[in-house]
Figure 1 (tube, rainbow over the protein chains, first blue to last red):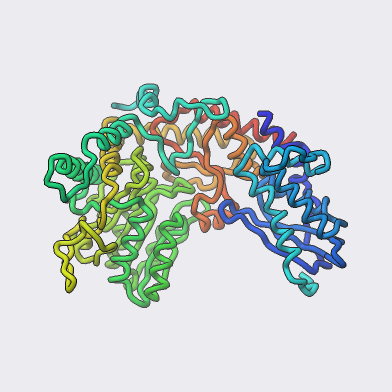
Figure 2: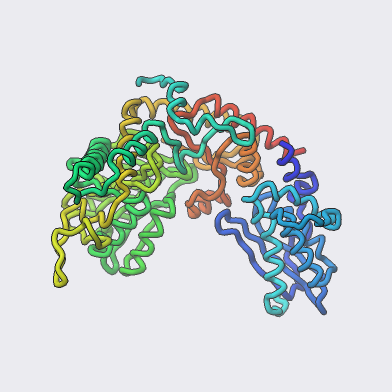
Length: 150
Length: 409
């Protein structure tokens, strides 16, 4: 069961039980929706970006433990980061969960995102872990939206 | 073989069941998706490819004659298995999906007109929704959906209310793949016929679990897939009443479906050849025939009784687990049980039990409207075949209890 324990680490279960930044975001000026049509998981990422800095971020949606925990942890990691830093983190995260990282990949530098390294042993679950990140990426590249009160 | 079945002996007929998954013995409980294949089917495919690997319906040499005879013998086995009057009413197709699309695109395009109504049920598989939606869009017809109750049973009076003079076609699943509901097929056919509608029965999930007779059901079309009844993938059956198959235009054009071809005019072969253009899945059909021989050697009645035991045992074992909610508690069930394990997402359940060797299904089961109605994003589903045992069910229940512990810790 050790691969399972690597996948469902306590920190991941904690994030899925108590997701961080799970809300709408009144100050949001970028957003995007993402979905895995095959499994029905869906997520909406709201961003408040000014001068290339992610000042605030939140998400909403439904999905499995991996998808939810990944979205939750992503929001807590990229909050306050620059758009460029977030993109770099996504690149590294993607390498980590697909197991495609080069030999000198620094897992420690991933910080708490390293909790998702166990995903690489479960290829069919990679899409769960990366859904929120793809959606973040789409939100960043989406045109700036007028702040709409929900 | 009589009831109770000699399961140890039956399991030896299925070499796939002896394998290990992640170091644990495989417990295969995704039979609604596809079934494992008995050695008798595998052997038949092999001998077919060695002894009679020739094209059918055209060779004048002996090997082609043998292949043709075996292929047509398989058609006859299907006819006998479903109680059709003539083997010309048996059209070989790729599977249930193709059978339904064939009817929608030939019968439907010829006979469904603007304003006509097609009735399906709220628990259909996507393959019995989308072809009709496409047809309705093209012809300006209207798709009506008969509702089910919260237990997953069709509300028969509501279904009957939907039927009327504009109802031209009714299509429904005999057994729901997502909920396990056995629909009152005979009563549904009768009601539709009272209004002059044609009825297609999707028997994909019924065929491996119960004896059925198309003349007793009196359905106009019936569709099923070979791979769900221990046969190969890529072969399936459309049964159609002779007079309907004759009235329908052909589907795909090509070799084998013609009487004569000139550049001015082609005359078509009679059914079933009219619907079987091109070289068919010859070996697949022969393998399906072997699969039907196999289940008949055991007996559909004995299979039905064995599976009823499994289902009763599994319903009890699952509901004993705290937090388990069965999705669908139909009055009559066959094949499948869908459930939620507390608030653990079905995909997490599927991944965790897989690591202990259990193959179960997690997701929407190609029945998104059913999931939406039940208020769940998807379910975990176990589905049974004649080779499953109550020990396997107990082992799964223990593994599910462990899964719950893991998520609670």
